[in-house]
Each structure stands twice: as C-alpha cells, then as structure tokens.
Image (cartoon, rainbow, N blue to C red):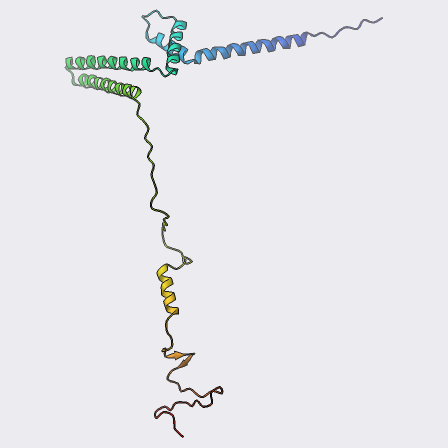
Length: 218
C-alpha cells in the first residue's frame, strides 16, 4: 500500500499572515495620520514649541484646545473675543517697547528700522481690534432689489445691414407716394401729353384736337 501525502497549507498561512500584517501597518499609519492632522494636536505641538519654559503635557493641551473648539461650535465667541483682545494688548506692548528702543538709538538706520517695526506692531494691533469688532458686532447683509423700468430696449452697435426693415418714417414716405394724385402728370399711360391723340374704335366720334385752331366744326 502506498501512503498518499497530504498537500501542505504553509503558503496559504504565510499569505494570510502577510495580509494581516500589512493591514495592521496600514491601520497604524492611518491612526497616526489622523492624530497628527487633528487641529487640536497640531496646535498643541505648536504651543509647546513656543512656550519652552512652561511644563505642558501634549495630551492635556490637546484636550483643552478641543474643548475650546466645542464651545465655539455652540456659537459661544467668548474665548475667541478674549484671544483677540489679549493679542491686541500684546501688540500694544510690542509697539511701546520698539518705540522706546528706537528713541534711545543714535544711528539713523537703527532708528528707522525700529520705527518701522513699531509702526507695524501698531498697525497689527489696530487690525486685531477691528477683527474683534467684526466678531462681536457682525455686519448685516443688505439686499437691494432693482426694478427695470426701462422696458424693452434695442441697442444697435456698428453699421446696420442692408436687409434691415424700413423704419416708421420710411414707411410713411412710401405710403404717401402711393396715394399721390397722378391725374395731372405730364405722362399718362406711357404717352406724352403734348402728342395728339387719335380716335379709337371704341369712340369713333372722338376726333383729335387740332394743333393750333382746335377741332374743325363741320
């Protein structure tokens, strides 16, 4: 008797393990991307980078920022208004410090450079206060309805083509020419009025008029 060997299923198991590992890595990368691209997490990393002297925890900072976003979603602008007002105060402090520092300088280039920076801080402070005013007192949209009372209008640009219909004045001139009395014209039925007319067969008694003395009476 011959023993039949069963086919090994190792390739199938290995392929399954590879697929599971690839899916797990893709899930891990997706979760890492979602964490890194979350607005509160990016803001937390930036805040921690610009405040090195303050011991902040990344997760707790992100949680606080998320709470601020949730409050803003409920149309509560208190925190945003506080931020803008405090930024205006900080810019005002920068303006005053740069202006005083420029006053102490003796070199004209340094005075000019510091004065420019001071005026930029002052301008940014004004813009921040304007933004705060727009947030606190938003402008209402105004809708203006415009009625067209001119009716139908025709605008002709350039030279009119030859096939345009005649105007009202041209129609009146043509109609007047048709109604004109032609009984006294010098040319009647294609004959000159000065030419003597001969009697026709329909009216034999009609004689031609003499050229000088008129018709002869018989």
